[in-house]
Length: 599
Image (tube, rainbow, N blue to C red; front, side, top):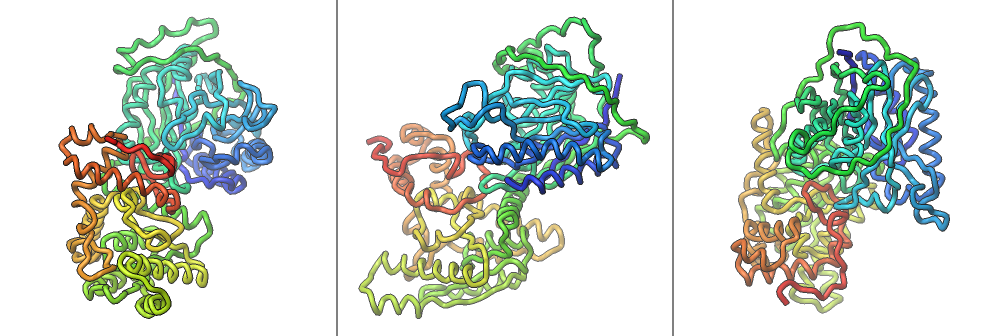
């Protein structure tokens, strides 16, 4: 049985940095060649980065992608890498943008994959299944492909597919079985959410059985605005056996020798279609109506001169480690890709700012993190002590800017009381952080969690001020869990826990009035988060929430808080998505909306 040495380049691209992304392909192809790889695959839209959103409407951007692809093929050959087959994602077009008056159905922008070899673009494929749910809007941008590209390379038939093609039965994978391919290369930009790695592997196993072929699945790593990509690239054979698996949240080259069924001789009838029972495991079968375009390469794979390459199977990590890795990677890439030197935020001594501080230090290093204590007349001694203690533990740049004189100056000129005075304190703190940002170039981080964002428990232009929010998709109960995990992880490694124990154990408080605690305004977070998960993540209505055992009056109160806070959420900073439904791209509701559950 023929063997092919595959390399899956699980790498980090940057949207719009076409030259930089092409250079990355050249570097990683060199590493693949040095490992003896005969074919190396890169993620979806590697050349342009992903997602490109409305950049796809610009003819100049699409042309730059197309030009870069051809130049990359030439440059790889000039690098002495023309004998390595390179599969790479890019943006192509065979028609105008859908926004054009000249747009024609069946022609337009394409989410594409190309195979480069010998200094040429030898084959291309257009993504067939276009996702239009959650964070995806691909029906808005692209036209679906209707033909599967099958490349014969060294006696092996290789099918090219892209991301969502693997998430749906039928289409390319049904066509791959009909074509009798031995290998399906699936290139991805599949965003992270908790436990998605547990969904991917069974999914790929179903597709491998459906196609009757080995599937090589390569996924991107890195952060792009709200999204973070976790890698977790895999190779699965036609029997569903996991052959190799990369780790998560780090660039990696997964190299593995795969035995693959040889291509059938010309004129051999195709294999029988897969039955639902043998390949789909209860999943509905999709349509098998794609054409097949065959490309035969006249160049043979480069010889393999060393022993078998075994990619290995990376160990899985705990949920808390997975989330922490996603949050640190998302923050690091947002800061670095947008050119910020450092970050700053209010360091109050409370649990949220403590966890943000620990994430920032892990992501960027303490020398790039500025924590600012901004005590008022209501700030407790233990909060100030906890902030100073955390700064000492982590080594971040710690500063103190008392706000009471500034608050008093406002109150000497305006007659304010009650909530207005509480919010004034938060807004003075926001002004201080933005002033430091302007003066010293820091990116301001806001520290509110998903629970607070859901119910509007924040001050607009106050504690919500900032350019990025690491905890935007992290419920309050999970914030505590992450804090305990991070401290325990430090202890296991022989280091000092970064978060003071009292920041974890004391009752949460905004400390904007004497004796204030969150429970004055909100239900217990364990109860609140359970309601929010049902209402926000699962779109459950009032009746379903009450049927699940939640108190009716508490459900009504919580849903009202969520509904009337939409205008605040629309103005909130972006933050890393870790759940099935994050605020922002995932959940789109009108601000002006009189519909209320149960009314």
